[in-house]
Image (cartoon, rainbow, N blue to C red; front, side, top):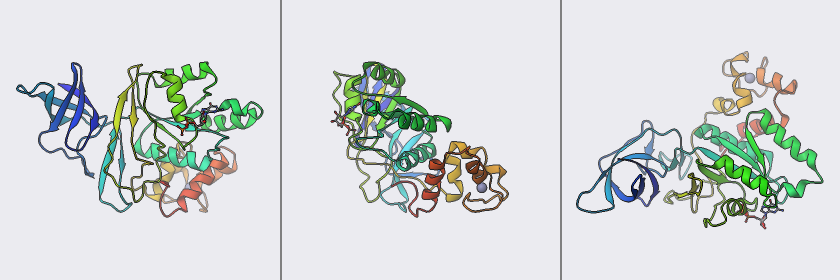
Length: 306
Ligand code: GDP
Ligand code: ZN
């Protein structure tokens, strides 16, 4: 029987089947190509379950379906072993605010790079727009900036019911993750969308993972619209991943298509002659803040995950 893993505690897994939730153990060994993981099965995984005849509500996970994407964490950048936090995520909603508190473009861009590397679609949620009625240009500019490079955006305020309904429609039926700095309004938005739904929303940033233990387990909560919200208690951020600096341009969608037009095949798009990316920046085709983020990440020894 096919089911989806909602929760894992390390040795037990709660799996949602059509007939209800069953508690499962794993039978056999599952390995992912090229990845040494501390946990073979993660929240969000689609698995094949064999029910145990003698114990009702219990089963064995006997197979795991290929993942469309997954988030992993390492305890250190050099750590060989990774912990798979969650798999098959449909949407990461990054909640940002231009004021109270301001979210920097640098932070947004690092998050977007990480999400590109994990292959997770992002919806940028510009929240607290009620605080910006006197500065509409700043909001328009930020929204246009990210739409121009290919990201989905939405403007919300917990005081504007239509915006809450619109956000709810965007996440309906999806497995989603709510991320963003503390104080941007993640919990308020979730509460506004689902008044009778009581979950705590953490401050996931896809950053700040270094030095943290990798033993926390995520959990998926079913939403009233049929989707799920992934909760990652105690996890402040995700790190991966060994992005080669020469590959960083691949994770900026507006640069990606230009990369084969640079004069040098190993162009880092910093100061090389004949660089198509720099030319596009000069022509105003790549937003200056995006290129500044690219430069900052390139100069950063630790990669984009801070
Ligand atoms: P979280 O840390 O991201 O979960 O943020 P909270 O949901 O706890 O919200 C932080 C503060 O921002 C609270 O005082 C909320 O009332 C406030 N807040 C959340 N959304 C909005 C909004 O759309 N407009 C305004 N003005 N305040 C908001
Ligand atoms: Zn170049």
